[in-house]
Length: 136
Image (cartoon, rainbow, N blue to C red; front, side, top):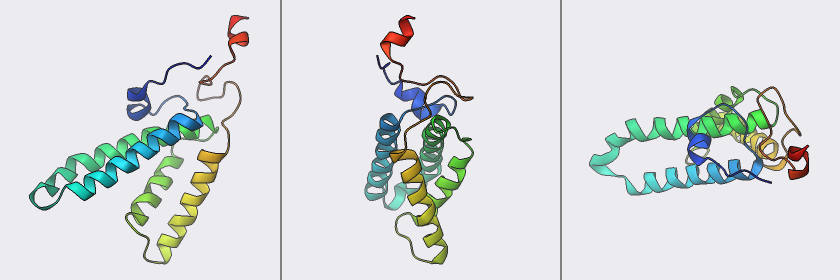
């Protein structure tokens, strides 16, 4: 039995755990929204970036923290991943950007391909439990 995903908690809380699929969907939503924002907002409206970018950054940190918790890692690793995203957005250009790309490749493999820890860990209960185990 899979509980419903609380999207507001996923985007606005860094505590707890989040599985692969909700994290991938949330990350895709954030990156798509960021790309749309940057392609639509031009000229005199660019001052909105002082509000919009911190919101994107905070939501990204929350989603990454929850996924890192599910993998048994500290949410502080999200800072390195977010720094790498900032370094290569919208396109990598220099040597240090190459290092950031390597960090992002590691993050994609670790957070999108590898499964979360089974059962409870120090960051909380697993999001997905088998129905037969919950009844016991």
